[in-house]
Length: 333
Image (tube, rainbow, N blue to C red; front, side, top):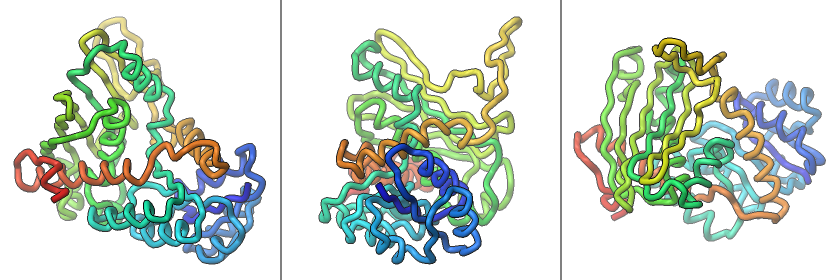
């Protein structure tokens, strides 16, 4: 098949390499807002370079991947589905919830397959955790703990345009909780603090956040996020049930140091970056998209899934701002 890739920044360049190595991908067309970047990536992975998304969509592609800046997602995604091309789009659908809703409605109307990028759905540990829930071996769940701790904050410009820690970082936890448990979130309570760089507070954001999600079967999910975890990149999910408990992310790269005498786990080295911790998941995610393009499977993460995560993030931001629990039903009125 012939695939197109729009956006060749950090994750886009990684995707370009992955796509160039995927069986079944015969050719790759790439473009970026910076011509020099387009040329460099195209030469490195043996792709065809074009100078605009419009030319890419007109280049006879069977599917397109969008890894451009967040603000460009709505326009690029709608252009692709209007052209009838199956599309993979990195999260989020749009910066604002109202825009994401409009995008989702437009996508549904076209009937074109769209996959949104939530790579934890393809991580082996998270897949095994979901299988444990589906099989019933955990009994009924009472507590879920999901963690994303970054080694260091992104640059000030990124923070200013990110939409905040809930919309930028915690969304991965929100999606993982919803997908692994198979339940919907009905209520959100969030709090946060700033003890690090002033530019985060200046952007109206927090550098550390805690969110309690109440699921529709009364399971409680506790989500922890921080921009400061200098030991490494920490992504984990715990599931505690009436019959058993399991955890994803407890490998030797876990960036925690035990204080128990004689305990050598984790042996390290710690995961240093998200592309290190989730490299296999990113590759599996794009392999799944190739199957979507080929018509061999439905989208494993639809626009409706992505929209649910947007509502949870919006509820968390509102809860932090107003210091109160927020029912998701409030936002859907």
